[in-house]
Each structure stands twice: as C-alpha cells, then as structure tokens.
Image (cartoon, rainbow, N blue to C red; front, side):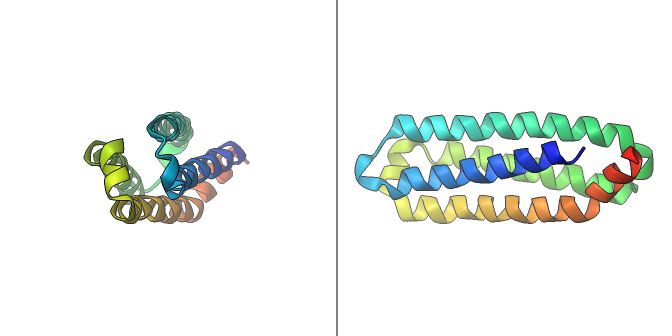
Length: 132
C-alpha cells in the first residue's frame, strides 16, 4: 500500500534533482528543459497528494488530530513554497542568478526530504496498520 507512495516520493526527489541538473548545465541555458522539469515535478506532486489524501481518508479515524493538522499544514506550506519559487524564479532569473536559485530550490528539496522521512515515521504505520 505504501509502495506506490514510495515510488512517487522517489520520483519527486528525482525530478527535483533533474531541475538542479538543468541549472548545473548552465552553458546550455535550456529554459524549455527547465520548464518541462518543473511541470513534471508539479504534476507528480499533485498526483501524489491526491493518492496520499485518498489513503489518509481511509485511515482518518486512526490518525490523531494533531498529526492530521501537521500533515495538512506542512503540506500546504511546502506546496506554497514550491509555487512561490516557480513564480519568483522565472527561467531568465534562474540563468542570471543560478547559484541563488540553487540555494533557494535546495531548501525546498531539503524540506521535501524531511517531509518524506516524517511521513514514513508518523503516517505510514497508520496506513499499514489499517491495511493489515
């Protein structure tokens, strides 16, 4: 049951790394490649959130309200940060300030990694217990 979420987590992290790799390949300055990578990450995040929400809905009675509140609040904050990054960093600015973009985007990637670890500790056991 959580395997699908794990696959999506890996995919999101891989896509985030792909965005950084596009920027690392700085001389190419491929705005099209950057935009495609960003769109792929956005779509994967949306699909993942829908799948995860469906699983959590099935387990909602077993999840403590404070865990559910943290889950939603932190998810909304992270998604807001991702959207803000995409808005604040159009391709032209990324190419003009690649180091600053990478620093800003790495914060989002680090937050995603921390989020995934927290979900594995706080959420997965509940989902797995419900499935048993």
